[in-house]
Image (cartoon, rainbow, N blue to C red; front, side):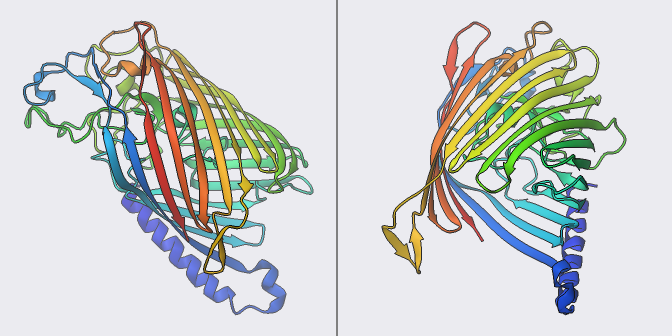
Length: 453
């Protein structure tokens, strides 16, 4: 089931939800406690982006047909340098709830500029989330043992969903940025202890630049020998391996299994909460995964080199991750930390990420339409680091950046303009350590105006 099938399923689900809501509205008062609630939302994001120019040679001997006219060597280069104003996404959201026993959620992105990979040739409409949940709400503390079952397309249970900047850290990009498809079981073992289990399709391994735009890789008209010397619309960026979007429903391969166990204290949503989660995932990598907009295949096909004889030192087909997350909320202060260890077809990689944010109220100075302007201000800083250990194999892999050590410092501030409108300004400061030991920077300034209804 591709995007078309998911879109049809979404339309049918929303139509059914609206009809059910209309039916419920005429129920007797005694049924009000279990009435069906349907909510809709819309979000749009516009950006000012200023990307620093960086261009480094690729060691891969690309065939002449793959290179732009007159070029004799391939390069890694900034995806789209300079200053740009762009719209990244229009998002439609629908939520359905029936008492505490049933919930459903749909999220559709239009344009989807910052999630597209390759940026210029991937699909512009994406069903990000489409799931139903039966049983206990995992965001609420139970009074007794509870359980829930979630099915559809949803985020990994360890993902940070309350990010305070528009950018992503290295760890959140590499390991859990995108949703997966399958089922998740949750158990609340009293007020403080909980467990999560999942069986999902698994996000294909691909690569992308960790800044706003993913870049263009493998976009040479699918058949470069029939249409040689393409001129790519965008640069390749400086890619890292990451778990890309699960585009089509595929039940033929080995499922990814996940397990997590956590402890939490405090009342969710109260502003005073501590949550610690340990987790692990495992799956077998596919020989190849077809991805829209690129002739590069995902999983082992990419790791072994999109061109024969230029692969990394892989062994076997195992993909394993284990890690730990920590969430802390103390009034207006919040902290998120994540540590991950990965084995990717016999190659090891480690990652760390930490984000701190502080939200505080501003005094009343301006008003519009009876509402305070600039009511809150939220500075935030995020540090992340990625250390791959991919020694050996061919030295001519097309993107040597997958072997480099990365450190990323993101810092910015979010200003609420009015209820539903906010402005975020941030700087993404990347430092990459090349194989030679030299350090280079790859920075980006991003301003985001977000409107929510």
